[in-house]
Amino acid sequence: MTRLEQERRRRQWTQTDLAARAKMGQSDISLLESGKIVYIGRKRLARLARVLGISAEALLASSDAGST
Image (cartoon, rainbow, N blue to C red):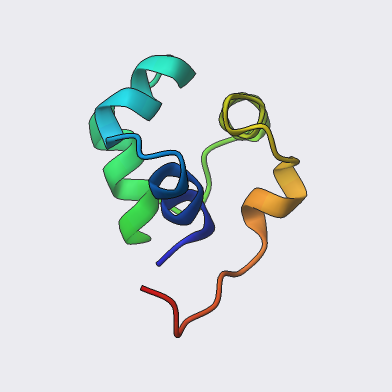
């Protein structure tokens, strides 16, 4: 599970909820969480981090592979 997905789930948001808050498409969130998109650009990364209330560096940090 990616850090993005962990943070989204912790807030009990759907991908659609996060996408709306970050002004992105739900498909973009899905692709990021699945690892199919690795790079999204600094502005979009900053926007996601701001919406989630964490730093961009924290968002990029690897998550615990054992968590579910």
